[in-house]
Length: 444
Image (cartoon, helix red, strand yellow):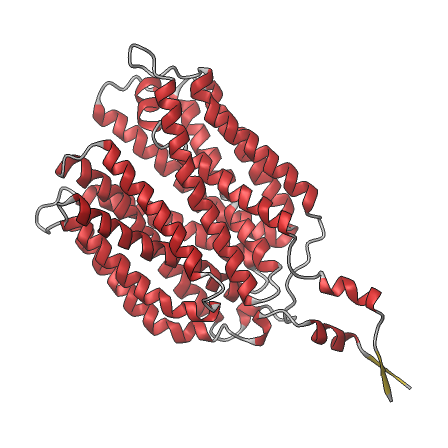
């Protein structure tokens, strides 16, 4: 009995079942970057925009609109990210990504024609709805086509870094538009070319990303080889997913408390000017970017990153605690850096392990992660503002959040062994030799 090996020409398609072209990777990075720019560009503009469109002379009314509008975007992400992820599992990643990018381009373009506060509310909801179809589904496409764990880890980290870069660029564009569109009277010329430019730019960028995605991907989407039985049905997978989602919620809540608390403490308590606050947030983005680049560099094995989760929570907890007690600007910079290191490590590491646990349900599970992170950040932001003025507990929001993050460190240390169960042969794509072996047939 001899084994007859199939010709190389027939084997070739098997080698293309996994992986993704470099240009397609760049398109996915551009998609995530664009959505982050679109979110960040509004941040420095929103309070002024609300005051003008709502004719809210009362500071309390303006603050209420600003909070509701920010929360509406997050609410839409929470509601629709799981739906988009499930639809992408059922109908493919490409059509859902195209819907998300085109929809986001359209909703962002509304800013060029803003005339009343109701339109602003509609824009925030629609932007959140369509943004929810981009980031988790792009990550799911990476998870589908991962030929090995190292490839999966690096590409998911790149997506996270693209989001950080977009969040860094977006507020700068929004701030520049605000300063250039300010009239001599001190009012913002809403609807002017200068004011609308960054929103039109973001809309065009989203359309270009959609066009490029359509050009470089196909409707037939190959997925990483796996067992015929869904990985989620295996023992321990469900527990691992629940653990990761819970840790993602705590991480996002910590970020929410940190962002709101830092702004309130810097401006109201320490009487710092806006430039110093902007510098601290810029530092945060840069440190997070660098932390992710190091953790998922070729020098760190992806399977060892599960042991980084607990230390990252501990560092983030210490940073949050120090932000609440620091009064010196230099000490505050160090504390902000610690929070950024912890958050920068946790976000992509948790995404990687969730992608590993998700099996063929990449879209649904990564959509859930986006939803719980959105909910966590919304609750954290609200708690950060609500607890800030409470005097019964010193630095209440920071102290309580630091305690929760410390608890997360303990839980994740115990959960590292649970994550180790995900390192099964089915999580790594077969080698070329194994692909050939499966196709061998015995002949007389």
